[in-house]
Length: 249
Image 1: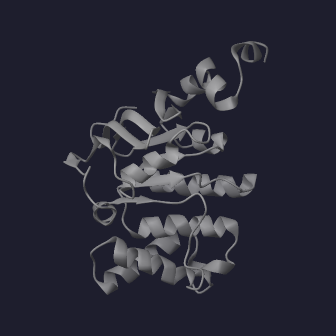
Image 2: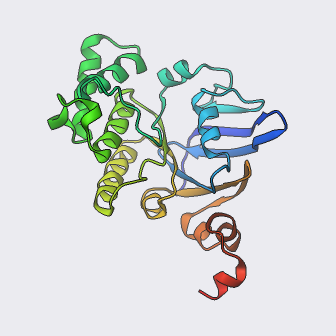
């Protein structure tokens, strides 16, 4: 599938802590409306890459273009206002607030809009994520699936153009995972570009158009999901299999 416009262009993005290189000159493009999956072992630099894109961490080298605008030095708050938002591997709601209040806070501070508009955005996000019936429930009492839905609802309420998903399918049952996949596909079909880090591969493969593989802070390869998953190099790095094991399967 070809995407006529780039939502994101990352060029030689690097981050080090002392002598430890976390991301090493990573470059890639993301098309408008495209979903890119990122896989790799723990410590590969995946979450750091998200921190660099969202602006919570500053890069040492490289650049980030977002719909043609250089945002390399733009703050995390400004990036959120531009439409870059993310979910976290461990849901982090305001436990003492209701589900609705959590989403309302995201809408109010994620965009520069009026209170009335923020309320409308919050209601829309709750409806899209099937959380309307839980609107008055304290976020701290929600099930794991509903807390993950709330992560997405808060993201949606900021009117994202680029959504960063960090292992959002982890810990769910098969049925719950399928429900989450449907929700993410709905978001994608609404024109939102997505980058998704995930270890639950069947969930990732159900949504993404391309996969990029990271290891030790470097981009190893990228391509169509079916090609990437057949790669002996990827199996060796990500699944811990050597070529003899692969040939014998």
